[in-house]
Amino acid sequence: MSYKFCTILHSLKSPKNVGMILRSHVAHGGSELITTGHNLPWEFKKGTQAFSRKLEEKCNIIHIPDPLQALDWCKEKGYAPIAIEIQKNSIFLDEFTFPNRTAIIVGNEGEGLDKEFLKKCKQVVTIKQFGDVGSLNVAVSASIAMYEFNRSATVANSIIGSHYKNG
View 1 (cartoon, rainbow, N blue to C red):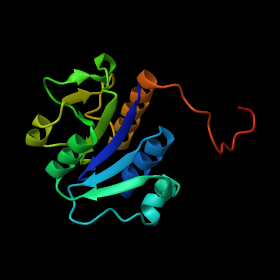
View 2 (spheres, rainbow, N blue to C red; view 1 turned 90 degrees about the vertical axis):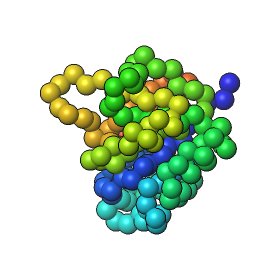
View 3 (cartoon, one colour; view 1 turned 30 degrees about the horizontal axis):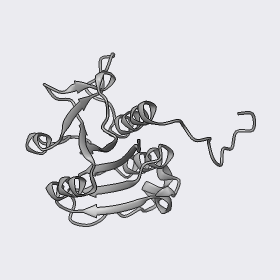
View 4 (cartoon, rainbow, N blue to C red; view 1 turned 180 degrees about the vertical axis):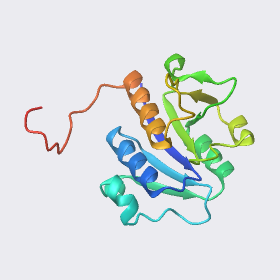
């Protein structure tokens, strides 16, 4: 059985968040990384690259300005759109089984994903929180979801290019 995920960044604004998500996306073996919700493609400048470690060259980045067209792209490519969002009637991540082909979707740092967009996703998944905080950072949430997708799907590859000598 083939497991594969892509990541969709809906209307993100922070270069740090985009860079960290791209880095996690590559580290977790993601396929395409989609940017949507902006008229122009994301520009990987110094602020983003400081966090992405310039891994954008190892990633197939696609820009689809219209978020609903990004969902259409998912359907065409056989990905199930799974939104990572805090919402009533969602399922908790630790109770969720990812489809074999998943589009992990995260939204804007302040506004998240709007309700109409969420209605078009196959599932909305919430990451449980245990402390007194309103929400997790979007890059943290995306990374946790990527890890959980892989944990349930595949055997990890060895770390490539590690700077650590003993392990």
